Amino acid sequence: MKKHQMTRRTFIRASTAAVGSAALGGHFFASAADESAIRKTRSYNPDMEYRRLGATGLWISAVCLGGHWKRLKVPGHNLPDVFIPKEAADIEALRRNRSDVLTRCLEVGINYVDACTEAEVTVYGQALKGRRDKMYMGFDMWPACPREAKYCKAEELLRLLENGMMAAGIDYVDVWRLVASVPGEHSPADEEEFIKAFDKAKKDGKARFTGVSSHGRGWLKRLAETYPQHFQVLLFPYTTDTKELPEDSLFDAVRKHDIGTFGIKPFAGGSLFAGAKDDRDCMARARLTIRYILSNPAITAPIPGLASVEEVDNMAAAVKEGRNLDRAELKELGRINQRMWAQLPESYQWLRDWEYV
Image 1 (tube, rainbow, N blue to C red):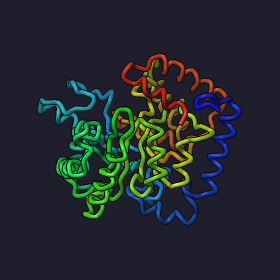
Image 2: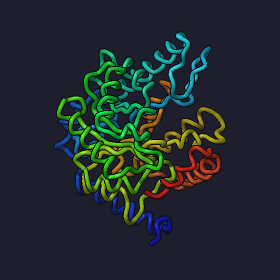
Image 3: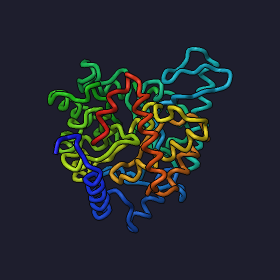
Image 4: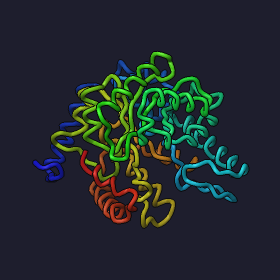
């Protein structure tokens, strides 16, 4: 079978087998013996579902907080998507918003935040001040990251790690996850440098676990198969139209080697909301997306960027809803996907490579 040729029957059979395998293996769903550990996880809430982040042993909320604050609007302020604005008033508005969102996350049991940029590391570190023990944190320092060759050296990576901890005001990071090159692959020489940096950071107690965010499915699969003790957590795209390959799937390696996974771009960079009637429609689409993604037990959690307290509550509600979509919901999902792909901007065309994983 060719890489992207699948019949509906083949896809359903492959997906069913995957769910059964994960459930029997016990790596991705909690057993009775796990309940004590789950109750001890950070910001535990009995209304939230928690999933094991692979061999790290961390119990992570089924939806987490992504670092980006896209679509963020604060009355009276003009806030950019990713970078901290220069005006002091805007900075304070942004900090208040992020602190409010993070507070609500803790209240509903969301216990992991992923910061991808230097600005995000700074803002979320400040928001976590005095409550670092309430939330797990992962980060990298884009644009200073392995997308530039000079940052593929161990000593440079360790320097960036120090800078990130200083910016966040923390003395360790739970998941140090690098941002890989745009094509999503690196040379064996780069991999050796990454591992050297990982080992040093762990030895010094500055990073508990390590991994990478990448747009390269084949490269991630090789990392999981070759260096599972170093690349313990993988971040990669997973949208409302992502499906598992029946053969040669990344998830085969994820299950076999007990890798923790976070799904990035769950809303396709905002394209999921193209043509939405209103905010209520957007909220419904977001919940449908999360339900669909969580139907794959090998995904620890999607990490959407959440712009408001209301969006946090919407994600918590999605976790509590059923995972089996009915015929009407599947039809709606198909309609949304069709429009999502049609409205996908040029800068996000690479997401098409993640329709089959």
